[in-house]
Length: 180
Image 1 (cartoon, helix red, strand yellow):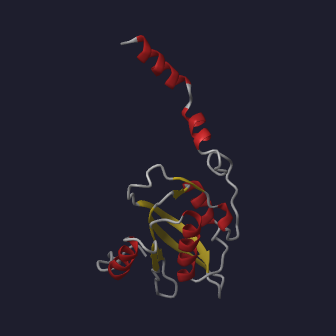
Image 2 (cartoon, one colour):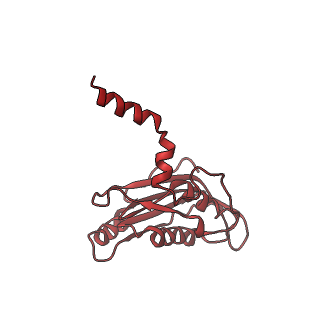
Image 3 (cartoon, one colour):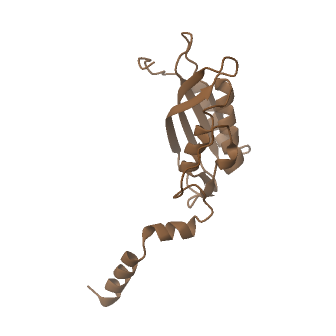
């Protein structure tokens, strides 16, 4: 092994990975810090970072199996699994800030459909993605489950057609409902 390779290898080992991350993502406030849980809806906690590969179409998917909000009429809790998928452009959502943001719905009174559209619109405002979809699969109350789906394709791009196609075909093969 050459002396130059050994010196480079040693240098890499001596620089802790967390220091490198802090230098490149120093604008993030939640990641690596104590969590501040808000008990009222707030989009202000959402944070983004630069997408290092905006030229690529990468589908990013988050599953949140413990989403909770309140019925705006009765105040009863509503429970759902949220499926959030997006194709980033120049910005990406930071996952811990997304977790804290979704937690902020815990005491928020809104209908299921409203919650999904609020989440989608807040994420569009944050990162201006090429494409995004949000699907909530709510547990039943009163014998009915509600599964609102919303999506968006960036205007003037091929993602508008993708959004139209996905909207028309998103539930052609619904899963067997045996977990509700």
